Structures are given as structure tokens and as C-alpha cells.
Image (cartoon, rainbow, N blue to C red; front, side, top):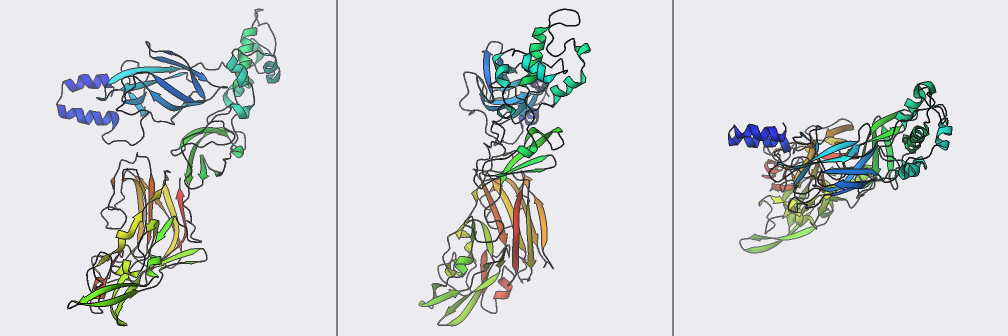
Length: 551
């Protein structure tokens, strides 16, 4: 609904309806996409920065901005930054109405706008009350369509550029290529037209009617020279990374912690924000020019499980270190020793995490056991030995005392900015049931993308409650704007999070692999009590072979 019409409509209706219509205009939930300028610092002057283009002139009274390519013709422009007077948010106009426009997509840095088959677009500036503060028109000149194809080489060599920009654009196609450049249209239309129909032929200075047409030839030739060739898919590469083409998708894989918002594909001469997919035009091996969805991403270090990597944390190191504590019996202090063994083991290209017990003993007499799961996750673990597992949260090392929640030593999350669509993992699972009816035994794998303010941007998980006879490989979709049921499940590493909209910028990633989903609380007791209280199934194991994020 257009804003002006909506305003008239709201005057005739209840105030409650205003909130509903406002949701349709700009969305009820807050978007975390960075605005092009801070809302509390409203611009007093028009500012526009473009990648590959420059502002030629500005008419502030008519609200018109004239732009042109900085060098050669480009089939798209990228908005680097934009600020308009008296504005708190900006949208593309969804129609050509410069007075009462419909709202289109919200403008954010890195947005790519096609310049093919059009020479303008409108920007709607809204104030803090979502009223139209102004509509600005961005305009450029389209290159003229060539009128002859008898001899491309002759017309190009004989023609004079119509402007300095056209002269510059007659250089190498590699220099003038952009993320959306293409040459298919003009060359195709030239070959289909005859010299008799167009009235020009090669370098001829006369039209069919005898009138001079040299200016038309020059315009045609310079336009054709300015039109860069589409970059071939086979020529795409990136410094420090790899480029993979699958169907209509181009995936750019970069090393972990690369800046995905500023990726330059070779031989393109512009950088792009590839955190979200960007449409670009390329030529395939058969010479067909088409639109491809281009996105960049990273894989997590050590996700092939061939060796331990510092990106990952585990409770296993503490399990392998003997600890000690004090147990008071009728006010008499008794030294208690707590021991176990490593429960995360690398073998070949696999990692196995296992649920095992931690034993407490005094005077060399075993007095109690608590069961702890195997955990391998993105983050760090500050626990130092078995005391951190057996005695966590407790002041004394009671053999049959309170459950020990050792998740207090788990620090979850690693820096991450990508927006994968799913994760794929290959694993097998050996199930051993526990007797705790509240915390039933199951293996757990989850991935959660988190914003800087601890909002869940996207999440996905899988669990297993029965043994698998062989290896399985599963792909799990990441649900954006959802916790995928994780927050109410009672798993570790999520209690400080809330659900976001799915549009937030990703600041970190949380990944969890657990042999027993609930055995981050070590519980048990004496031999008569422990089977009723174990929160994990003893000797249950999860073996991991490969983990991959899908973009």
C-alpha cells in the first residue's frame, strides 16, 4: 500500500490499525542490517558514494542525481553509502510515482542495482515516523545501440568516441569488467541487422538518403567499443581462496576470518559484499551468458576431524587430569581424589567423543561415581581437571552430593560473519540407555549463528536416540529467524540467547557435538543411587568424520 493512500485510510480507522499497516510498510521486527547512516544523526546534505560509478551532477531542488561510470560502461552499480536530508530510513521505490511511491527493498550498503535496460531508479526517504521525507531520482545515460554489424573491426577502428568516458572504455575488457558486465546484447543485435535497414555500412559517411551520418556511426562504434565482454566462469579466481561453480551458483570459499564483505573476484575490478548472495552475469564454457548467484563463505578450522584445532574446545583434557577435593564427614575433613580418562580421541581422520564416569575415592576406597558426557564445541573450556567435572558448583567433593554442572566452565562461540544455508555432517553413534527418565540419553549436534547482541540469527540441530549400524551423512537446514526448538530443549551453550529476526548481521557461530546431550551435568552418587541419576548413557559414543557448512 502506498504511504500517502495509507495515511488517508488511517484517518478513517482506529488507531490500532495503524500498527498493522506500519508492519506491512517496514516490518514489525527490528532489522539488524546496518542502515546507510545512523538514525540519530539525520543528514542535512545529500551524500552518495558508488562503486565503479561517480556522481556527475546534483540538482537538490529537483532531487535528481546524475551519475556515470567512473571508467567504461558497467551493467550494474553498487551503493557504498548514501545519506539524504531529513531521512531516517531509505527504500527503493517499487514504481515510478515520484510523489506517492510504493516501497520496495530497503537500501543497505553493498546493494547491487542493474543498469541494463533502464537509466534511472528512485529512492524513497522516510522520516522517523515512516512518512515520506522526499523522493530522489538517480539518473544515468544508457549507451546507444550499435546500428551496423557489417564489420565490427572497421567500425570500431574508424569511429571517434562520443565522450571521454567512451574513449576510456575502449580499453581492455579485463580492466573494464564489473561484477555484472556483459557484451551479449549489443553484439547480438548488431549481427541481426543489415546495412540497408540501418542506413549505415561499416565506415561509410553517407546514409541511404544521401545525408551524412558520421555522428551516428561514431556513437554506434563508441558504444560498441564501450561494451565489455562478459567474464568467463572458467577465468574466475580469488586471492587466497577457491571458486566453485555448481549450476547457477558460484561459491567463493575463503580462509576462516576473511572479510566476506569485501571480496574481489579476479578478473573483476570491483569488490563485492558476498555475505549474502549477489547476482552477477558470466559466460559459460559454451559461450552462453547468464545470471549467477555469487556468495562467499568459510569452513571452520579442523572440521575434517583429522587433528585437534584450537578453534574447538573439549572437556576431555580436564577429564584426563586427576583432581582432588575435600569431603567433610562429621566435621572431619577427608581428602577425596577424582579421576577419569580422556573422552575425546582422534584416530585416523575421525574423532570419537564418549560418555564415561568420573570416580571419587578417599583413602584409596571408591565412594561414588558421576557420569559426564563427551563434548566438542566451538569455544573454550576453563576447567583444569576432574575436580572441575565432579565438583563443579559444589563446595565439597561429596560422593553422593548435588549434581555438578560443569557447563559453567564452557565458553561458547567463535567469530564468524557468514550466512550458510545448512550444515552437512558425517557420523555414527553407539547408544547406551540411561535410567534417568527426565534426561533421556541421546546424541546431539547443533549449529547456531549469533548476532553481536546475542540474538539467534539462524539455527539447526539433529539428535540420535538409537545406535546407527553404519556411517550416515545428513544435511540440516539452518532456519533463519528461528531457534529451531533449541532454547526450550535444555542443552548447554544457549541460555544467554534470544531469538532474532534472521536479518541480523552474524558475529559468531556456536557448534556443539555431544555424546550425551544432557550430561554436561555430572550426576550420580553411591552405587545404590547412581543408576537412577545418571544424565548420560555410560559408554555412549559419537564418532565424527566430516563437517561442512553449505552456502
